[in-house]
Image 1 (cartoon, helix red, strand yellow):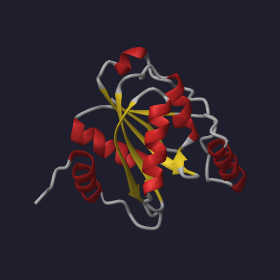
Image 2 (cartoon, rainbow, N blue to C red; image 1 turned 90 degrees about the vertical axis):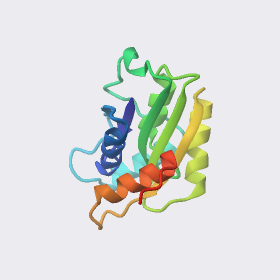
Image 3 (cartoon, rainbow, N blue to C red; image 1 turned 135 degrees about the vertical axis):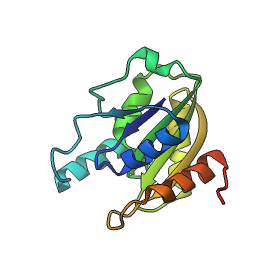
Length: 163
């Protein structure tokens, strides 16, 4: 199963491509911090504060327990302040995933190894077995090309080289 939090819908594109690769549904997580329209400075500051203080933002639509009946889980999240978004922290603290292998696709404006390390630490702190965690750099000014995303996911997450 794939779980995704995406306030701007950029990360959702990656989750949907991953869902096509794995032939798996994507459960979109919703939180109270989701913008009604555009991101405002106040919303950005609140999101960063929650992330820096390591507080989770409640998820309104937590999936049912039968959504976790697989051995491996995939989570897609944006990076906020160097960490997976605060709604993902809440998800990890409240989902029945202890002892399961969890993989992460993180999206950020730039890729950095510390984002991977922070994601793996967050998974381990939640009692999960950290799987493959990768950061995909995105640029809001450049259109997202799904075939490029698919190629990158296949290569980085599954070690598949396409010719």
